[in-house]
Image 1 (tube, rainbow over the protein chains, first blue to last red):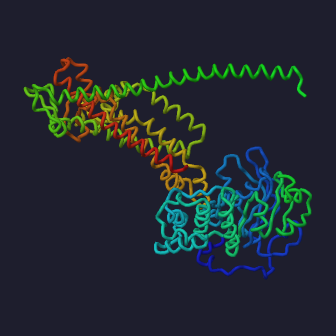
Image 2 (tube, rainbow over the protein chains, first blue to last red):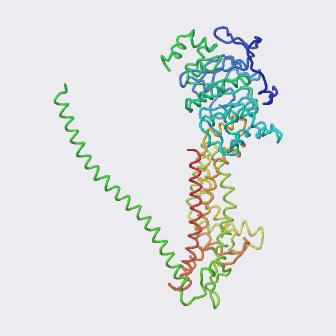
Image 3 (cartoon, rainbow over the protein chains, first blue to last red):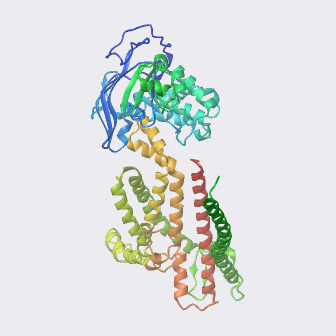
Length: 287
Length: 321
């Protein structure tokens, strides 16, 4: 398995503007993409079930590294399920299973022998509702590093500071790191959850409707953060908000009834979609 | 244009509504009165009990023929022998120590076992296993306490304790304490389980997503997050243990002595009261009245514990809102 990059090196990496066009993996379905990068995630013929209920049908999708990919589609279209297979969070749901192939940088994720603890260290997740632990701000961010013992004692404070800086929360909380995370506002809590995910040094960040419980101002700050973070991380975001998808993402994948209808660069998908259903959805005719 | 039939129907239904509103008003009003009366019944009972306890306790402390009894001598005296000897001694400390010893043994047994059972039920057990185990616990909660007293006397002491050490008498604090512990186990268990299950699933998901194992999630997120509820469960169960009467009256012995040795017999506050009220102590005699002072002391201790438990529980409830 690939070595986990330390958060330090992650954060010092320069912003990747995609000038290099080398890519691995099969080309993405849809139009030739204007932005090309290394492929982070490959999915082939991925189907998924909850008990007998099939929720994903033969998905083929590649997601480029260090870009933001948005999953859009009406409720129940399977986009959140797909996201939750990318870090095997569905393992916690009885009756959930999947067939086909998902690979993260070449590592197959659906192998029964895969160490999910290690996978989830490489794949951070941010949830719909901010879910900080009822602990101090510091302890929230330090939770992952402590869990995996990926720090020397003196490093921990530095690591927490870096993670909070990376999630644009440091200036607001640096004077009250020991106070409870539950005292933060919703938007701050969500940025804390992002800092908590970043602290273990993931390659991939999954965001499941991260702004749906937030007010417009907090939403704007999270969106700005997402645009900054894509310099360092591959980000997959599930969203119900089409404006949000168009604001933050480089590529968009549209799902309908468990099938991938269309995927491509976000501006193309939103202006000149090839599929009728995509056009109907992005123009608000249904969904 | 509305038809005549429709208009008539509308008028009828309107009249009907007015009549039924008046009826409902009367009905609702009387329901409220009945409910208030029933609520007052329990309030009144509490007030009367406290009043009786206070009045009889004052009577005990101001008895003309026992000038040696004072609040000071009562709460600091280390000897309790109201029935023996020429001069009865009323120092409540042996009774308090006996009560606390039995309660401590019960707590030391029931708290870890109950919490770990709650962890298993809440985090590890399948829904099926959980429902089976919960019904077993309900059976345990329904066993009359006199049966636990018998159990202590005829099983725990002779078959578990006496083989370990010959110093255990027929009546001893340990056997009674363990039996009380078994009795409060369902309380610890079900209240702790409620507290753990009340921890939002989103916190577990958050920890899993950071690469936590099930044990990490339980030990580092669920238990800390539910801790105040668990502590409140402990306090409520201990309150129940302090007030337990039948088990200790049967199995702990009848000799009030200031000791922390669990193999010795002890007398608890409740057991003393049973002894007095079932014995032939004359009403209005000093022993009779002393039991009210003991009861009031017990009431104060349990009241403080219940109150503390309620405060902790309240703070815990506010945490996630």
